[in-house]
Length: 345
Length: 111
Image (cartoon, rainbow over the protein chains, first blue to last red):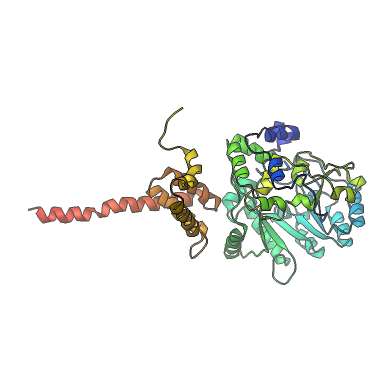
């Protein structure tokens, strides 16, 4: 399977995606929902999380990927841009968490150097590891040890605790390799009581529906993974699929688009709207541009500020910016809410 | 436009039944909500039971609602189908077991 970009699919164009989403006039504009809650313009509550997408290259081609990542994507962050990120991080102690994502961020050849440099700044580091990368090549097999040495928190997608659903979303053989990788992470101390090494899993619905309740699903995951594979982990994050990129393509081609958008809008939850992750996060793309979140990044909706690049990082201005919103934002406010850290309401 | 007794959009109006009798509707929905909560049985298990019962009572609204709900709660296609087979077996068996009465009667009157 190729990325939408490699296929020449019109949905690889962010402008086309926005046209599709904004045509969604059948549903109440997201802006109006926030206006009714007196949340407009949507402002940040602080600048605590620095989420950096260091490349679209990935060893997997998941059907729901909002990044349209894959082996055919070559866009990765350069050391020069990483240096600029490090300078911004050093100058801003308010930022406590650096969340490294991709693609498979480990495929960026400068990944380990970047993690080591962030560690020196005393920041808490999260790596969004797709698990299978650990087994993809011998050079990645020591990643669990590398993560442990740098005190990295590992957040990994495992759409379900059964092979069928996981492989359906992420590709054949992904479940089996993910289980092996989780066992390797456990062997390094990850997810084990008393080690302080955090291993959190992410659930994404394998279809056109919303996630079930996070706390009860976490119990089921823990029981199933422990009984069947002896795996331990810390927390499960349920994340709603955003109607963007490959998931948007799936929704449209399967005839589910309208029904899914109706579900998202009908499930709008004001509590989740107050807690959207863009209020305390800044997202940096592989080429150094600044966005309110990883989803806006993929739609090429840059921050509303005079400086939109990491080379001119102005925290005061960013802290008072008006966050860019659109119909896709319903994905973060439906039901129990959704963020890179799971449910929000 | 085709006219049907059953319309899938009507499922969304289920909550409106209180329009004609609010007190009883409120009591029903409150009870319904309680029934499906995690308790001695999990909400996930209850959803699968609901799917089987939906097929037994042949309610298209319930089948629509609980096919989605049970799948969303993680039951596989094979598990959903096996639940329907349980309903089918009980439904079929309930007819067949009455044949004992038929046999009793026939044996009573036959020469």
